[in-house]
Length: 440
Image (cartoon, rainbow, N blue to C red; front, side, top):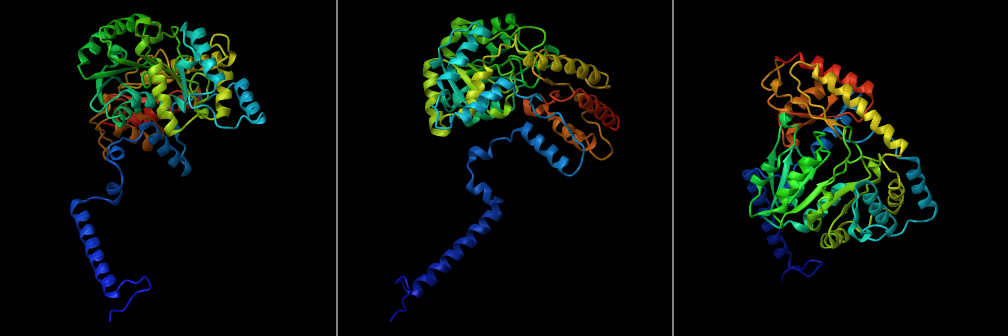
């Protein structure tokens, strides 16, 4: 008679099964070691394993770790205005809480904010969009990702000028697309030409992305330059254009030129913007698109399955901020004046360092100096092979955090943000200059 377990199974059977499981586990462990595969690689998707970490956030985290150890690090790595949100916008957020505006909002955004965005586009850019042409997202980052997921199929090519914002290529790959990088350099103010764009177009091209003012270079496309690019795109009616204009208000020598001004592109143009940079509202997480109905509906469908609607309190604050015209807002103009002065000081000091070559950016709050003259040099222990090495070396030797140009598609340069006090910028340049003299 066979002894039974409490669950009614023969103990002999259980014993055999446990032995089999142990053998299988041993086999799996052995195979894993032979293939040098970690458990995380077994359970995680290829999608995430092949995705690069955001270089800007990675460097910010490293500098915070050093600060936590008591080291005085000057962080020039993150793109965040060091100004406060306008008082009227903050009060609108407070009022929303007090009025119990704390329930689920519509997925594409509240009617009040969508209308405010349409009014802003008319006021500042002379563009005619209805509130139904607008969709609000958790920052411009989600807005762009939504669009790429909505229009890109596996194998579709997306043309991206370099230098580019670090997340563009990773977003394209996440959507199944293929990033096609078109390079520019400091000699051409980090701007591609219409001729370069046309050479990059193939039958597989689905999207062209443009960012003006640009992160990381601060370069701004002129009306003439955008017109030439628009004329090329006019010949290719199947290409969708994503125009990231998040730094619209932060320009120094000219007014903003939007891709939306070209009416013949409107049926396939997606304007991306938000309140983070121009209104100093990074933590409120409000971005948006203005686009053709088909794309708005598609992104609404995607967002409805991923995040649903955006924080009602943040939307109320953003709607109020949108009422501020950049020309008439004291707060925006004071921020712009401070950024312009910092830029001029920073560029001058950087160009006084032997081996550093820095142009004068026309917008945003970054400089993108060429540093390749230091590559191949050493302090006797570390050899600087490229921008990644240089940024890490400066972090530990100068205690200044910056971001490698390699992450932005140009290894010759590094990105430095001047969204911090002038005193810190002056001290940062002193530290960088002193550290670089150790390389030979």
